Image (tube, rainbow, N blue to C red):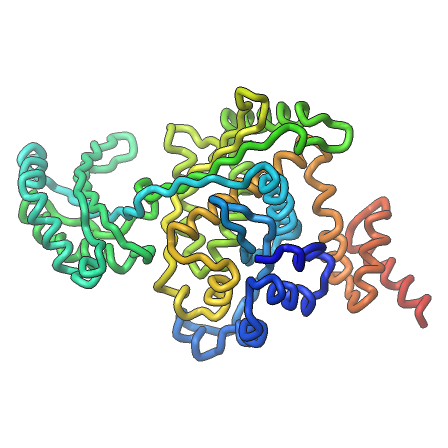
Length: 431
């Protein structure tokens, strides 16, 4: 990657950006031609969902400056919210100057559940499941031999007992967890097929009745972590010293750890970045988001997903950990043209590498948001893009968008009524 071609990337127009990505050896001229074909055809969309009417589009942009485990990335992000891509890029730039992100990706093990009820003897049921563990795993793997042939498959079995809750009027459940290595796929279909292959046998072993057999999106055995360490001289902001920014940012992190009301917004900011990359990659952003927020509550209280602290030498250290059961193949990843384009743009080779980039984006997003909050406030970064959005809503087009936006930023009230009035003044002067 030749980054010199990406200087002032945000100031380039659309055509210049695409040419810069080609010049930087990130995309090829063929990719440039293919961007016109990124839209879903009616035929493809009609086969992806039921009752298709039209395609709802989101802007697809690129976040820059990401240095993850020593490799540079341009990261595709699909999102409608202003300033998210700018914030991710700005955070990544500072962190890259400090050596970039270091990631740890756990073994990609997904979880499937068979929930059993009406167990006549729990002790006997648990004993039978333990004694026949190998046979259960074999039946699971026999149900999906192709994943086994590629080196994956069911690897382990765990049993959980959920007591009856008199207050909630819920019965007892015996839940069997099947751990499955799905390799490069997220693996929902693989897991569900395996679960169906063992459900009747589990009923036989336990004497119970299966209520349901389904994967869990709470992928606690598929965790991704990113860490960064930033010297204080890179943290200076306006009148704040680097030490002041560090300390205030740590205090903001501490607030999000102890206060669920703050933690929700803190984590939403993290997910701004994560969901945008997951969506661009063609993965299930709803599953990732649900699992992340569940993980934020694994202590018994909803807390911040990230932690910021002071290093022994005074640097700022940030860490983010969450479940990231994404895939690099399968589903819409293999058929959606924009997902395929995103894969070429990012240049990842495996699901683990994709996880590493995504968790790094979440940490960069969090760093930028907290830094803005404890220094200049969050609104300043939103002003430019918000002004342009209001200008367009007011009916501005072409050069008038920027003219209205610039005047809006200087106005006492930045709202739609003011935008309409400014647009009318500009149009009148141009007549």
